[in-house]
Amino acid sequence: MADASIDAVLIQIDSTGQAILGLVLALIMFGVALDLRLSDFVAVLRKPLAPLTGLVAQTLLLPALTWAMTMVIQPQPSVALGMIIVGACPGGNLSNLITHMGRGNTALSVCMTGLSSVVAIVATPLNILLWASLNPATAALLRQVDIEAGPFLAQTVLILGLPMALGMALAHWAPRLAARLRRPFQIMSFLFLILFILATTISNGHHLLTFLSDIMPLVILHNAAALALGWLAAKAIHMNRLDTRAVTIEIGMQNSGLGLALILNQFDALGGAALIAAGWGIWHIVSGWTLATLWKRSDARRRQEQAA
Picture 1: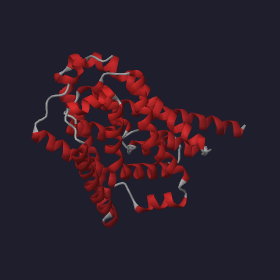
Picture 2: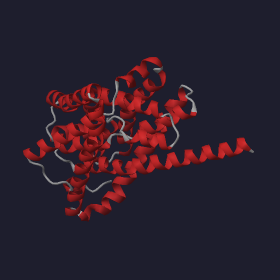
Picture 3: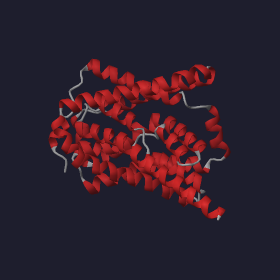
Picture 4: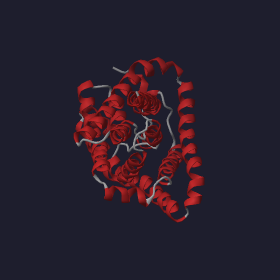
């Protein structure tokens, strides 16, 4: 059980800080949208089974699985809420890189990231409200931080949807400019969040042991469950090896930066929830890179056996 004082890790954010974090949220989604092309969605229409299976696993099954985990494990409410928020986020762009490193189907990974990011405009806030309300502990926390369903849904859709539409429009009408802006926007939003985490962590360094002992084990377990869900979903419809890798990584690498920004901006910067999202941001890179390395080694052994 995490120490209740962990909720005091992050500093209080005034209205100006919340406005800045709202801008960071917009930058995150704008940067994601710069990677999207209409051709990505045409691919879904041509061969829809694999990406739609991944979408169902990411948008419906992972939030439900996360809720079930919070009910069984029963972490403190803010930690459970952080797990639910991360579980409701779309796939992150790093999943495309990790899939490529692991010799998976990168095109499928890009397609699923784009599809889940667009659907997340509505699905993410709906999933957060639904599953958090079904856990008595997090439902009480929602009331405590005064989250009203209507305004929260409208504000989140606006924050996510408008920059997503602008980014996709720019990528379509000015692809060269979008290509030049993509990395700066993604790096800018990522660095802001990292700097914010570092600043608040340094000022609350005495919580580091609690983070390592209480938060990270839950992050590792949650991430392992997400990866397993992706693998099982792929195997359920008999995907080939490369598609299975893409779906596994996509479900296991959430856009935790988006989750963290939502927590800081919309949920009173709850320490337990924010540290879950921050922990995910660190750990899913480790687990994804490890899987990619194992898959590459497996491919190398297979080639050697075939050549022998």
